[in-house]
Length: 216
Image (cartoon, rainbow, N blue to C red):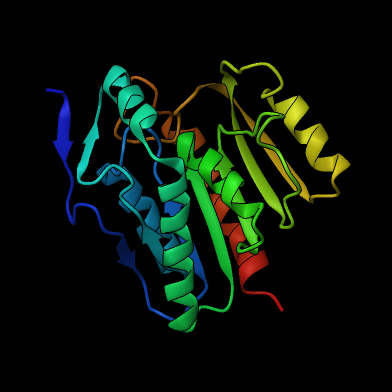
């Protein structure tokens, strides 16, 4: 695939912030771990979080939607979930008492899926949901950011997903950003990026995680 871009620290998580603080695992979308995501990690680290940014595509990323879809389809979901487990377990050993998982698109789906196992104290998902076939109880509060314009499979639309969360008793907060499309928070995809909406969503993410990971 000629559209592939090499990433720094290929195949291993990038860590930002002071070890021992509340952990946030920041999970990339199907474009891979592009530089803009590390700027989000820096934002979180400045608030006192210990941030881990895994590379689920083993050293490559892309700006091409077609290549991104191929990378996503080739992803071993079980291995990706196991990597999140490893990061969380290592960070708990290093002193992180609370854990948040935040992801974008594919990464949001993985974050929501992983959170059903009970390892996270808070979950954030950007333009992501779980379909009925994947949905179980999420035992942690959830923050959802949605674009005004997006496409969803049957039963995956935000209204249906949020209804299931409420049915299971999951605390959920959701926001829709007017004038945006899917991937609006990815600063590396110029055609889709909406700086104003992304900044607002990221600030809401910070406040949400501060409230749930620094309390108690």
